[in-house]
Image 1 (cartoon, rainbow, N blue to C red):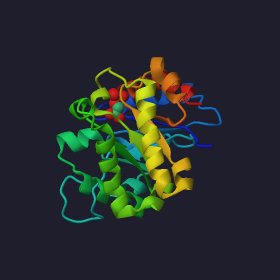
Image 2 (image 1 turned 90 degrees about the vertical axis):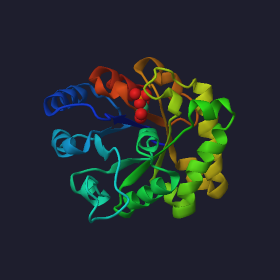
Image 3 (image 1 turned 180 degrees about the vertical axis):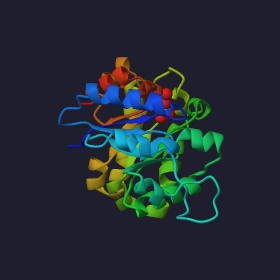
Image 4 (image 1 turned 120 degrees about the vertical axis):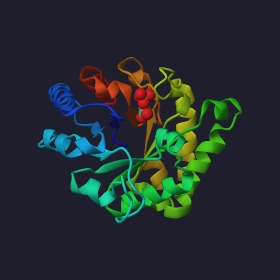
Length: 250
Ligand code: PGA
């Protein structure tokens, strides 16, 4: 039995005042029940603030990205140890916006994955194809390549303490969601690929879907057998809607 996880990726949104209002409202409404784990990933500068707001709640805190190096002359970067120090337990790695807008390739993403685990934090490894890749019939190949880059460095055992997020690039922030069947196909492929290396980990690794998850489509997505929750961008900025998405995962 895999515990559902719903993660809110705030991206570069918010302010101290807006975050406080959002978190307070969310905590008021959150009825995750016994089952669903909830995670918030605010921008780096607000992590400490949000950690304070989450004190005594069951909601976890995560970084949106991380440096692959442990420390040193890397201006503008934030290490996994720093994220841990301010209260994070999860870190997104390889989000498509990092891959596409900041040139992060598979090898760098794999090093970040290792850096996160070296601090005992849980990486949320994001994978997914672009529209061109899907239309060319390359979805499986692209997602497999992104996974293989991490498996080559970390081995399948590392996935026992990781989360995978399938986020088709064409569905992120576009309002265009993958159908539950389209998402399920890729999730099943990912699970089969991991299970071929280690059946136990294949059965237990949580695979989230991301890309225009909303209160109106969450339930049917989360009902699919290999979808274990969501990585939610835009809809995580609205407390009511995000709380409904969390409830849908239960
Ligand atoms: P979206 O973003 O929900 O706004 O599509 C998802 C993500 O980028 O993680």
